[in-house]
Image 1: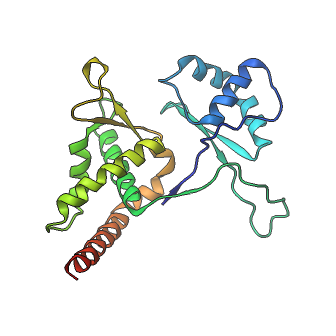
Image 2: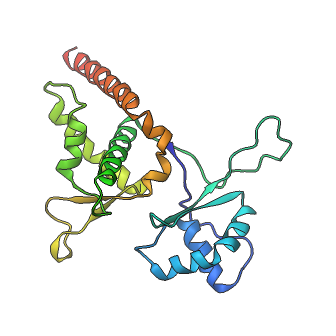
Length: 223
């Protein structure tokens, strides 16, 4: 699995009007969430046609989901071999993901689909233990399970860094104590319905890979 969205401080080459400039600079830096800045979100809805025209000169598309409340920039699809259009440099780099990160994203996407099917609250919040429990069912029984779970903290932090989880502050604004995470709904833009339909097959494949990886480590430990 790999993800792609703009996360850079590079700015646009020509100075547009002030409101549009603020929008473009924000989008060039990363994802815009409605909940984080309702004023900017309202401006984007008003100016989205101009934003689309402007970023098109950079070979980018605006992805805007009004229902879920997020927007970001991504590279336009590359021309096919029979397309005479020039191949432009990519402003947004592709990010190949490790097996562990791919597994966690798959599980979080499945959990989000189940959560949405149940209705009710729009925010899916999971504790660290909840996230570990999602993964534990894919871990083979054995002495290395505890070590693998400890290592998964790094994976959770990577998913936070990618923007698919948001670590929530505890009461009083402190971050100490048991961590809770909100699953950001932008995950739906990167794990689409077709990918989700094949999820059980993918998870079975992940489970086989994980079992094989663990077996190799155990053999190495005993040598």
